[in-house]
Structures are given as C-alpha cells and as structure tokens.
Image 1 (spheres, rainbow, N blue to C red):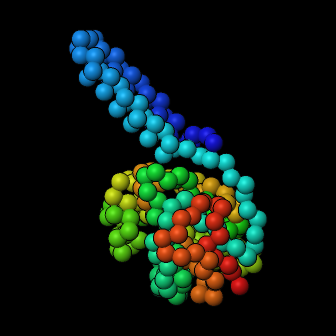
Image 2 (image 1 turned 30 degrees about the vertical axis):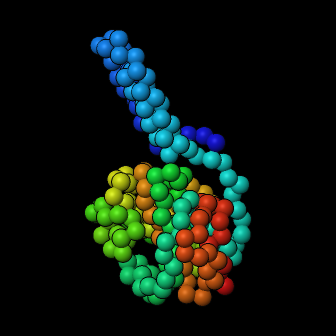
Image 3 (image 1 turned 180 degrees about the vertical axis):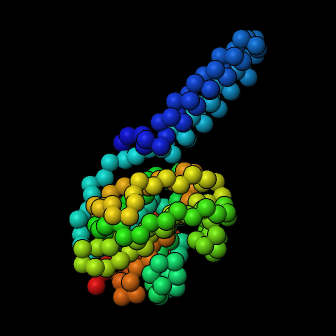
Length: 219
C-alpha cells in the first residue's frame, strides 16, 4: 500500500493547515480543553479520510488475453446495449462502474493494448449515476486497440464531487492490462464499451476491484 502521487501535495499542505489551526486555537483558547480536543479529533478523522482516499494498493497485474478487467474499484451501476457515437459509431455493450469517495480512485486499463484515440471533454458535474453524465459531464474518452484487433472504449466521467480528472496517456501509448492510465478525485464513474459478442461476467450492484475483477470475456 502506498499514497498515490495525486494526493501527496494535498496531504502535505492539509497536514500543515490542520496543525496550524490546532496550534493557533490552543494559543487563543488555552482554557477550553474540551473544545480543543474535539477539534483535534475532528482534524485527525478528516485527515485519515482524505489519506485513505489517495491510497494506492499494490496489485498483481493480470495477463489474460480474452478477459476484460474492471478499470476501477466500485460498484456496477449500468449493463446495457447502447450506441457509441463519439468514435466507434456502432452498437456496444456498456458496463459502468461508480466509484464512491471511499473507493480507490486509480483507473486501470481493462486490456493490453495501444491507445488509438484519446480526447478530453470539459463539461458539467451532474451526479455520476445520472443517465446524461456520460455525455454532458467533464470526461475523457480512450480507445484501446488489443493486439488481436479488438477495440475497447473507456470513458472517465467526473461526478458532482469529482472535479479533477487526471490521465497519463496519449494516442500511441502502450498499456499493460491493469496498468494505470488515470485518476479521478472524490467520487466518479468509468464506462467501458465492449463488442456486442462479449460475454458479461458481472451483475448490477456487484463490487469490483480495478485490475483484479473480470467484467467480461472477449470472443
């Protein structure tokens, strides 16, 4: 277990600010011991909550050509057929995973492949489970081309709380299966668009682990 690079600066400055607040209050109201203890306890709990959000557990990267792995920790909220009109322009099976603030927010590649297409879209901040969030929210779209030629589209979507999408890829970037490609801060969603003949291996409300839970099998 380690702290993700996206959280190190935030955690450093948050520690400085909380320490300064608690020290300053101890000088201003030194006789209010109960109040000071409550504020200190609240500060510690708040810091631990932010700390756990940026945790980055070690995983053994998978290497399964036919399997598609979850791109994120979270809960499956959508399994349906839909039209993908941004790049693939065809019917696809969509699996969507919602990440709450308590989930690990590292985003991982569901397959091995080369990034064929990548685009960032500014947008709104509807709640991540809103039906229009995948089209109207701030988001990124990435298309991965598997060595077999199969293409998988992965979309990061910012939610009402998540206002910072980070990505570490561009067109032409090779990705290992389970390899990290991005991060979304404080609650969000990731959509995966699969070929229609892919066998879905998860169910609605099933919990997933990024890079560890198989969500589909390719033909």
